[in-house]
Image 1 (tube, rainbow over the protein chains, first blue to last red):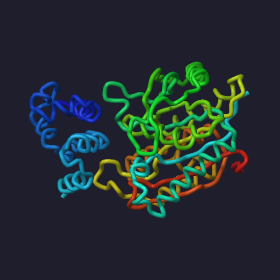
Image 2: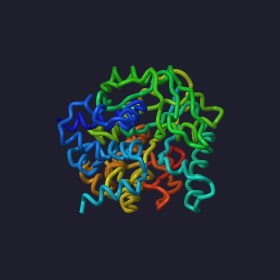
Image 3: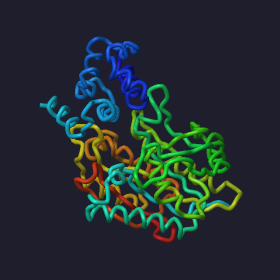
Image 4: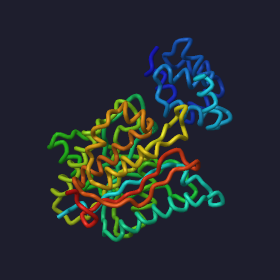
Length: 87
Length: 281
């Protein structure tokens, strides 16, 4: 629906332990709490940090989201993912 | 009468304090020595209160409320991040002076947001724990956050003016108080962007020259687009430096250290300004 809704999801997933647990357990149900369209939901589920930044989401949030939720929690993997998208 | 007796800039890069001693480089040792030097200078200045100006990293404040500038007027704790060598828990605040600064601001065109209870992050927790509170004479740390990490940002001009407001408020405080102001921030760095890890030493030196000369003009002339291009999104934190400089207008100083390297993600600048160090002509 908006950059703001995406930022709200990612902020919650950065700072709220219960949100991270719910996202890890059942991402579609967790994300159903937010006003996201199908594209946005898929970007969050898929850790598409480049796509999220392309929608205007703060890089502070995409980085925090990755480091707190992506299973590998690796900065190098995060940058590989970002740079792969950049081509 | 209260007075501002000195100012400092320093980084708060978490990687410095996450690094185990076994991995310390020569650069890391110089960085830690710079923190030690600032801690010692705060003691030599006889500071009784330290105002630390930091940046939220889209953690303390979220999309539901993003203050332009906020001052802690009550309970303070932190840092909320765990570092092996940095204590957590309560941080003593100078509540009467903090409340005075907030009220003085509201009477003079600066409508502070206030935090009655705040668990600060590393941007305030590191300077407070590493440099301020180890000095027995320091009775309180007053936290100030600027919107320099998350858009919409406080303007550079407003950040500088806020420092002037802090100075005026301190000087209007009738009690004896020796106040140090710390601008806490990295210089060039690209946080969460594809260039993360890159720094721009030329940009960093330009900023440090401004701080040491006590002349903010070249910094104030930078647009946000220019800062982003030359210094990355993390360089918006130079607003904290400007706020400190506004509290010591025209006052020069000395560079304590500058480092960058693969150990960290930002240019790390340490400097002191103060009347006994130099005044801009």
